[in-house]
Image (cartoon, rainbow, N blue to C red; front, side, top):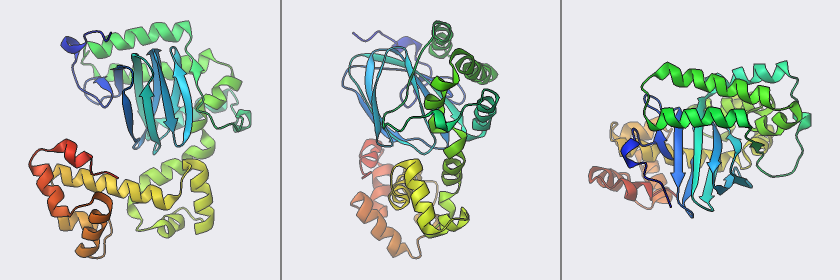
Length: 296
């Protein structure tokens, strides 16, 4: 049975109770059968399962993650999860700007992508006793809403140190592979720059790659075509812009490189099954879930 966390809930996060200020840390809990899906933005996530188990698929790579196991999701990844029993987890988000810090630690202990095998399973690490003690304290901080922003940043640094000091390189390499130096610079480039490009050809040119070379590298990194990824990202961002209702539709159309408003309208009709004005009406009525369900 799910424990009663209601009285201690401070900030509602994507998956549970968030730390104050920036939601860097999150304590998540869910009954069996709970499904979640989404796309990671310009941040990476370390998810640590405190109890229970869940089925996780990240960029098409799947695994069953159990109690006292953790995994990493890289920026721009598409994820899907389903709890197999009542489960609790700690989620730590770290922005792109902090990833070079991980790479410096990789260099110090000579982690290499050559240590990573080629099987298509999400890599996990077993949580050590020391890390478990640390997580218990973090859960207490988050659930009680300790209002010290710098504390959460320091605790994120501490998590990095504990991970790098608790495991040998051959175990760290597969775990860190999603954010390793080998492919991360390309992912960071894509996440930061895709909005500036009107199409795949332009994004490839910005990366100083031929279109064919870019597509091959993109597929290896994201496990899908850049066209489909950019199409989905554009649809999600447009839906968010419309839901916020801060910009005129014409401005949104220009922002996402539509040559005419008619082209923008056709895009919305194809992606969401309705017109931009109807999407505005849904948002205005406060039907957030209906608007969210317009995503294809």
